Length: 339
Image (cartoon, helix red, strand yellow):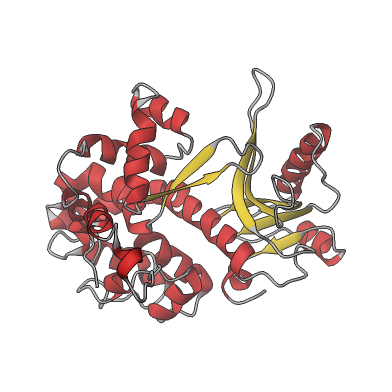
């Protein structure tokens, strides 16, 4: 059993595969297991809790974790009483994770990089621009953070040469979006409700939105029924197509590909995820525009099914299109319980 300073343990165990009889890596629980861990039956409520503390069992049995929210109406009050409470360990957890890593780290740059990633900067170039640092500074710090399991990088679904990064642990994103910018105010415990009211829109638009998109990608690969996409999915990742100068890029949140007989794999689905907005036909048109642009660029889109993911619901027109088999709709109920 090893300690939690990942880089130290990697060095100590560098020669272990040659001498070990048995080796197992214990991974994080998935989002559905996380809901069971916290004894939450409401899928929408489970998503909110997951966006704050993730699915790590240690957080569930932290003193803050023992004080579990009763339902979605209790969520705001419990956040203030637990994870925003400086007298409880969860409030300080993230700072300790980075501070106990080996000397030689530029910890300020680590925190700045994580904050930029929380703000939606996914590519190294975008992170460098956000930090106003040379582009050569960012890949090294991202490698360090990835080695420790703080961030994860995946190739862009449309541009495999571009790696997009996201924060791996929800509490880390919550800390950099909510706690760290307001730490001095939160240390005066009475200020927690006021701070939370002010930053709740930030939580909804960045932390919750990004976590929802990632949960949708995990669902596509790990829980979708075999006939959902017409073939077994191998990967699900975000993708961005560069547009003409002066035009916004075309983005997709959940791009599902099959086994890579060539490179990249067969395009099975292109999807958009909106956690806080009811989706309507204009969202479907956005996906259709992405698919059309891919076809113009030579991508085989013959098997690509449009998909929309929303925690806020779908219009009756989208439901009618789903009934005709024209697209895939995924809501929290299907996300957590359906196939």
